[in-house]
Amino acid sequence: MNKIQKTTNNELEFTWKSRTRDILDSRLVQTIGLVSFPIIAFSSYLAGACLAGGYAFWQWGRLQLELSVLYHLSFEQPKEDDYAKKSVGNWIFYTNLRRSSIFTAARFHTDKIATYNGADIYLGALPLKKHGDWLASQKVKHVISVVEDWEMEKVPKFMAEVMTPSKWEDKGVSFHHFPQKDRANLTPKILSEITPIVMRAVQNGESVLFHCQAGKGRSAQALAAALAKMTRGLSIEDICENIQKARPQASVSKKRRDNIIQSLHNDFIAISQKIIKKLTSD
Image (cartoon, rainbow, N blue to C red; front, top):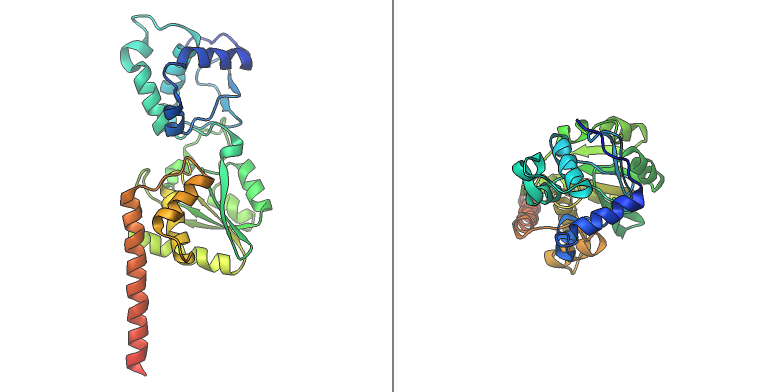
C-alpha cells in the first residue's frame, strides 16, 4: 500500500472542501450528521489512525475502503484504472459514510436531553473512555445500551478505547444491556423492560445515559419511550421533536413511534389487569 504525502490540517481541510463542495451540500451534511472536519490527520499509511474533531469511528469492515476512497477524493484525481473510480465511486463513498458510525466532533458526542428530579438524562454515541470519565463525573449511575456485543468489541484499539460493561462497573455505574441490531425497531416488550429502570433511577435522583453506536436511532427510540412514560401533557411527536432539538442527528421514525405507543398500551393493560385482580380478590 502506497504512502500518503503528509499534509497539514489546514491544507487537508481546504482540499476536502474544494473537492467536495458540489457534493457535500447542506442537506447531505444534515443527513449524515457530518458537522465538519476541523482536524483530519492520517498516519503514513491509509490504514493508520484517523482523528476527526477528536475521534472518528468507522465500522472495521469498511475502514480501509472508506479511507482509500477518501484518499482519492482528497489527494488526487482518480485515473481510469483507480480502484476508487472503477469499484466504488464517489456516491458509494458517501453512502457508506452516511451509514457508518463516524463521530466528527467530541463536543457533539453526548447531549443532555432532559432533567427530572435533579437527574439528567443523556443521549449519545458509543462512549469512549474519555466520555465515560466525563459522564461519571456528571453523576451518571445507569447506562442503557442497545448496541450488539460486537459493536463494543470490534473498534480498533489504535483508534480509541471504548467503554465496556466492566469499565462502567469499575466506575460504579450500572450497565443495562439490551442488544439490538443496527437500525432495528425496538419491540414494545423491550421498551417496556427499559422504561422501569429509567423511572427508578430518576426517582432516586440518578442520571442516565442512553446510547447506541451513533446515538441516532435505537437509543433515541428507547429514550423516547421512557420519556413518554414519565412526561405528562406531551404527545409522542412532541417528545421526539424535543429530543431532536437537543440532539439534531437523532431521529425516531413513524414505525418506531408506533412501537412506543404499543408499549404504552401494553403497560396500561398490564396495570389495569393487576388492579382488577386485586379488587376481585379482596
